[in-house]
Amino acid sequence: MESESLVMGNGGPRHKQYAPETQKAIESILFIAEHIRKEDEEEESVIEDWKYVAMVLDRLFLWIFTIASIVGTCGIIFQAPSLYDDRIPIEGFHVA
Image (cartoon, rainbow, N blue to C red; front, side, top):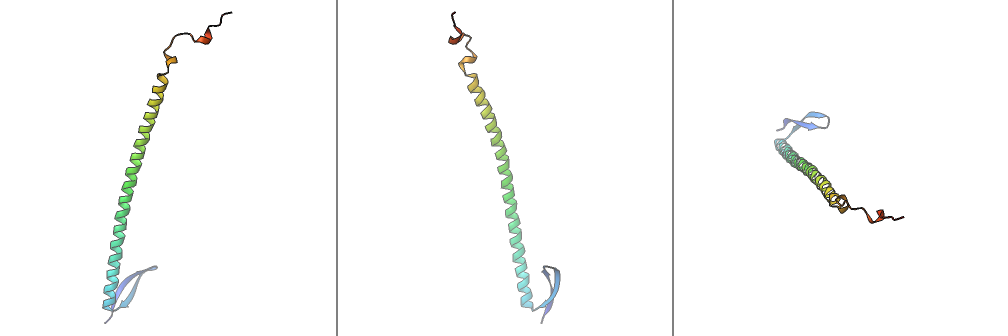
């Protein structure tokens, strides 16, 4: 005995007649395919979440690096002895 089923094709749904065993096999295959598709979507969701976390951490470390670079540069420049030494340099003693 054959039954009529709805099968999705490239051009849309088509009606075909299959034996009951074949119909059950098709339904099982479609169920497995849908289950795998849902798992793939969940994996992609997790991957997108990790990409977002990586982007946030990247931006955070960029700001930390920028601030550390500016503070370090200012610290090195302000430690220069010529900034706080009011003495006249040796080259300034030209006796004529």
